[in-house]
Amino acid sequence: MKLLVNGNIHTNQPGARPVSALAIDHGLIIATGSYQDMLSRFGKNVEITDLGGKTVWPGLIDSHIHLEHYALSLAVVDCETSTRAECLRRVAERVQQTAPGAWVRGHGWNQNVWPEGFGSIKELDEIAPNHPVYLTAKSLHAGWANSAALRLAGIQAETPDPEGGKFVRDEMGKPTGILLESAMQVIEDIIPSVDVNQLSTNIQAAQKTLWSLGITGVHDFDRARCFSALQILDQSGRLKLRVVKSIPSDLLDQATELGLRSGFGSAFLRIGSVKLFADGALGPHTAAMLQPYEEDPGNTGILFIDSEEIYEVGQKAASGGFSMAIHAIGDRANHEVLNAYEQLRTFETQNRLSPLRHRIEHVQCLHPQDYERLSHLNVIASVQPIHATSDMLIADAFWGQRAAGAYAYQTLLQAGTHLTFGSDAPVESPNPWWGLHAAVTRRRMDGSPNPEGWYPEQRLSLQDALNGFTTGSAYAAGLEYVQGQLIPGFYADLIVLEQDPFTIPAQDLHQMKPLATMVAGDWAWQRE
Image 1 (tube, one colour):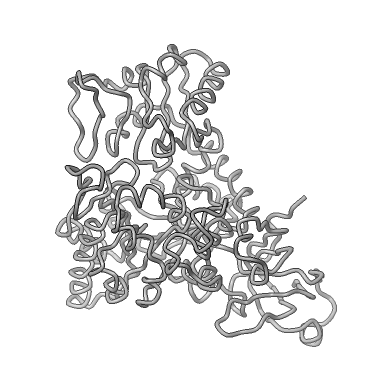
Image 2 (image 1 turned 180 degrees about the horizontal axis):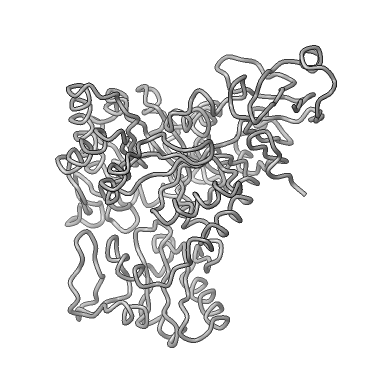
């Protein structure tokens, strides 16, 4: 048994004041109170950790991460630069370190912050004539490839665009090297991949980084190979993040035949929702909109699947015990998803099925008529606060006045919507303190756009933001009775902090760094 004493411990129980001590046994919180309470109840023959007045919070949960992509991104070229020239310089440096013919991978470019805009195939060919190069955009909804990569993938001028995607072409009809949405898969299918054992090693290494940020649990949205790697880690006792694993929609039939369902699994790895994509992303103009983009009057984005198609998948999922998690960015995509969920709730009632914890991932832009529909339908808004501050300039430019209904967390909360927070890493950093800062201030870390923040009426209190990374994420996973609070019967997943985030200026939240992270009653990480 362990006692943590002399602390400022926020249990995160609504209305409760901090306590000074916790008792932990077999990975669970078994009692809270004062040091004297703990000693009188459990005696002195226990392992005691004196916190020295430090603050304790529940472990934070990232409810939307791409764990495989994030783990692998730690080994590729960092293309998140302020200029295209710097991105190319970094790629050229990696090319010089890589054997001829081997792939050079990178991630993070964003044409919207580059004065030069999208890159070209010519630029990559000049720095890598003998290497296939493939760089994914920050949004993960666009790719940039050189001629060698296109050649290996069989992409030529006459190659037709795949359904739901596009090979961007110049005025002569030749590929520019930019691939949008499903077109990316043509390249990704031929890139030699690490085997599942190597991937498990990559994810194990990434765990340490996530612990250092205060993350003790995640909801993962990568595919089957990631699930296999996580099972290897779990079975060998090396998985020390609590992972809720989504199921790709194209594997729903197989999952149903096996008898899997949402919630099945172990303490560290359990099945989550079936994942669908309703549209693309804001940056490449593939988010599905009711009206055209402000500076692109002929473009309303790409709707991948309409409400009837979503409902068809939803019936099958709900009948098999699977909740749904649907990516929707634009106001049209969100509207279609809500229409489908309205039908699905009726289907659940008519068939005497338990109402499942269905979600919309991102919920970035809503039409005002849809503000209260998530709450009415008991649909969870799975959002990433860091997107609001990252996207604010392009949201204003591309959506104009519609941005008032974008990233509208306070509006959703006031309507009674369940919110759960994540990062979408590696699209953004998984650092939850950056997400907390964005939710509370609606400002970037440099203080822009102004002291009040972007659409300041959408700012959240720190407690509401903390709930998004704790109790909200636990609720989304059906784990609200064991996760997200530090009270008896709950997981002993917690973080120790030098300062109390509730007492520091909100603009300093992004600078917070844990001193230690505990998972299941064991210290998983401590700052050196």
